[in-house]
Amino acid sequence: MEDCNRLNNLVIPHLEMLVCLLLEIFFQLPPVKGKPLYVENVGVDLWSSLFKVVELKSIVRQKDHVFAELLNRLRIRSKGTPMQDNDIEILKRCEMGEVGSALHIFPTNRQVNEHNVVQLLNMCPEHVQINAQDFVNSKKTGKLELMKGHHAKAYDTCLAETLLLGVDARVMLCKNVDLMDGLVNGVCGTVTHIVYGNDNNTFPQTVYVKFDDKEVGAQRTRCGNASAVAVGSTGIEPEEERVTKKGGLRRQFALKLAWACTVHKVQGLTVDSAVVCLKKIFSAGQAYVALSRFRSLSGLVIQDFEDKTIYCKDNINDAIQSMDPFLMKNPMSHILNTHTFTVFLMTVQNLTLHCVCTHLRLNCIAVTETWLPADSSYHSVNINGYTFDSSPRSSSYSSSNPALVDLQGQQHGGVGMYSADSLKLNMLKVPDVNLECLVYNCLPYNILTAVIYRLYPMALFKEYLGKLLDWLDPRSNTIAVMGDFNDDIRKSLTICKFITDKGYVQLLKTPTTERGTLIDRVYVKTHYQVESIVLPTYFSDHEGIVCSFQCTTDDDL
Image (cartoon, rainbow, N blue to C red):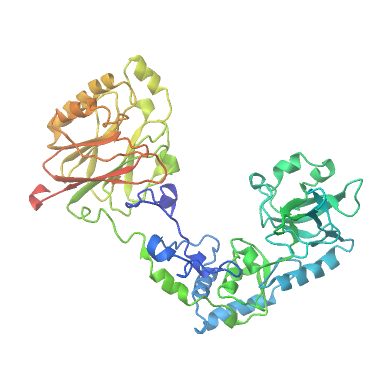
């Protein structure tokens, strides 16, 4: 896991677009009164024709193995399948927990509203009723004017006609108010102040809320009322929305009581403790979503447990099975075998921020722009099964040439090489050629691989590159020189002609960057059969390149 976190899926098999699908979404809840996206009768069969399946198996929310496995079984349990006795026993034990004032999760809005009102009466005896201000267009002036009463029907709005609030009331924002300040739909807190203006004692000017997350509303808090700031509260002002087809407007606070909320509302949240009521479950997946919000069983309290309420939609599995696996076809499968030496070249642009996915069984991974300092510890970039060596920019130059002296003091640059522990490879000590480069010898194949990064003037680069090529030439019949040359071969053939005149072949024909340039090169001199493939990468504007040397007979070994 540590390796994959550093270079998380850097090698992505050939694809036109990267789409990440969490399969758990299919077993959760569709929109209220809406259709799941995986059904076919929504105008187009999205999933079977356009998408590929990636199954993510690592569970992040639950660290308790027993609880995680239980939830996995509940997630895919069909309505007619008996629940395991052990699972029933575990869940029934959760009925004996303490309720207290914890968050309550109910299936229906009616249950939520009833619980919230009861809690308001108990916790906030001096609560107030805030009636929305509704406006209509004046027939005389055409301007909006405050109406008596409320609109007969209000459409597409989260603003309540009547809002009950009180100091110490638990509330939730029901609308995105300020995305940059974290004031988004679903964040919860506690009311600390209800402030009225001097000219209006019926409709508040501001409601101050102390949010559970201290970062939510932090910008407003710094600029808010001094007394509210003292307790870390954020001022919430009324919102306005058009709520009728004729342009009628409603003005109200985008808040709702939140001692309880619906299962649909908590979908996507993680909670440490809460009470889940399974009475009046009306939808497949609803009970699973409620139960799976918890990090552990210790924080879960269940009311009205019935195992028949926990089930999934039967056609979800059929929908998933109809989709093609994302990694079903590997474009390199024909060149990856036991008689192949493979090198993967990539420009990482800071190696410590990325890591290498090694499922392609690569022998060597050559990296440029490692950005590693000379005194860097390689522990943070190690990959299991590989040995790493580095040539940082700061230790690559000894020339007194001003261009190289200036370059040596600059950050970034540098090259590195991962070599598989399963193959006999040897790093060669390169003479002082004033290049950011490393050279490896694959002993079973006698293949020399040099990785290079170039940034200084071309004439000077050719001089030192020539010294390196002359040094490599007598040491093997098979040599690969690869790297980021920072010179588009489609505009200039200077360096290409210089190297090919020495007997090398440049393998790449397609662009290697998002800008359509071909600045990454692979030059080879060999008697082996050689193939190269350009692969997309997610983190860099450079693509990845796989180079494969394939033996034709056992005599080549």
